[in-house]
Image (cartoon, rainbow, N blue to C red; front, side):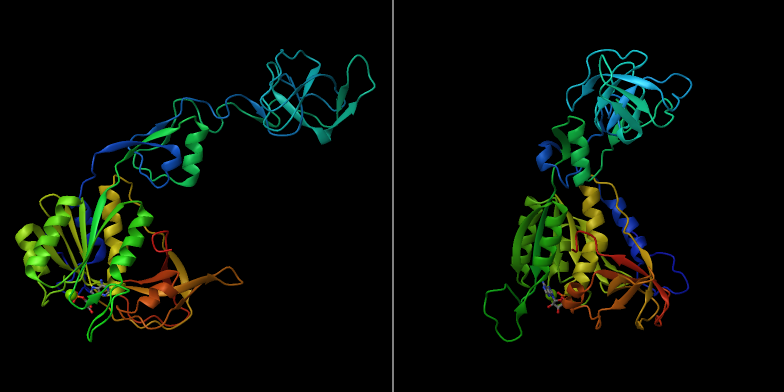
Length: 423
Ligand code: AMP
Ligand code: MG
């Protein structure tokens, strides 16, 4: 894996810009090709393995866009005052069986299928019904009606044979409805990938355990597991592993056997007292990166015999930011899903935001739309890489470009609203 990238004028030597790292890492991973069939009810968030092709026209036939009357119109519009005999009614699920003749119409409700021979609808408010006239009621048009008026054409939404969703689509609520409307009750999706997570560090304790001096409760595994659940991947939780050579070796070997991806936090920064690096280098082919982002400089990625390895930094905000910015796109690709580039918007900074040039900052902010419709963003305050409350308080990142320095209040910045992984 090449680390030495050409640097621009504002780059810090030895640090890799985030986008460079992401592009290189995405080239290193390949989608798993196992496919499973799931019922539509369980398909939300799963990734389509084959395109969904419609065998139907939607709507299946011409139908009415209004409550009114349906009839035939020739080349010329029917003029105001035209009288049409009401020969029947169309109810939902009960189309008119006959063929309409010139001078006839049927009562029709919104969505009702147009009878054969009909090609236009007049709204009920624009027709006068005269019930007395024999032999059956008739209407008089109050407006001129051209052919095609208030008609939803067959196949207007979807045509038979059309690909409605491509392979790689991560299914959303509306997609599930769309597939249902096409009569598709079961879909081929990629098999959920398995991600083993573990935390490393002698100082870490699980919530609920008692703390000795120098120990603290770990949070990374909880945050990462929550994010992974949002992604719909299968999580294998291997707990906390102490900074101990054989414990780490056993844990990584076990994780590698069970999972498609092994993800750790902690122990990836250079000059560590712990043994993560030693164990990983013996087990597989791992590269240790220094990313030009803040927070989140150290990051590791590589190949174990049976799995990919992703090593997140230990500091809680760094772990979450690198998980979100790097691990999520990698996991999406391994899952066979399309890339989903982050949504970034321009906003006015309402506070001064301190920054040194050289790395891309992912500061935490709260954005809102002010009374003039302008997006504004305010920093959550202290931005240390251990201050997890800043992520909890935020609803977006304030993404400040690598080369940029301190942002003054009222300057324009990029924000990245938190997506469903972080919400
Ligand atoms: P390390 O890279 O292992 O030196 O970790 C950097 C910092 O992150 C240290 O202060 C660790 O205590 C902290 N840290 C490591 N793992 C976790 C975790 N799972 N949860 C919370 N903090 C952690
Ligand atoms: Mg550590």
